[in-house]
Image (cartoon, rainbow, N blue to C red; front, side):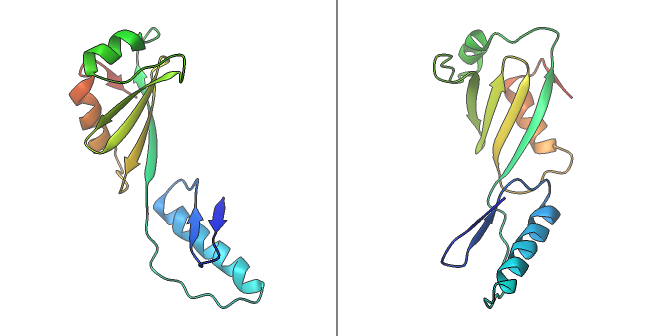
Length: 128
């Protein structure tokens, strides 16, 4: 999916890799060219990367208790996940053990940075 602005900026969302994002920008640029507009490719900048992982646990997480332990934010009436902000990253942890990480600025191929930050506040969990 892409958002194309009248200023000429294109925002591509949902790419699975940096390579896919660059390919999608080129694809949308070609579509604009076919409509008769002159297109010059500028610098392609990655704004934000999201990641997901699964905490290996045999039962549902008690997010209310966990939020108190790690100083997270959990309001079950508003949203079903607990939020934690660490090292410029935002973690949403669901009671199933699913973790959504946003705020990455560069691709972390093996997830070392993410695993290191998760281990800092959840040292007893294994990450799949």
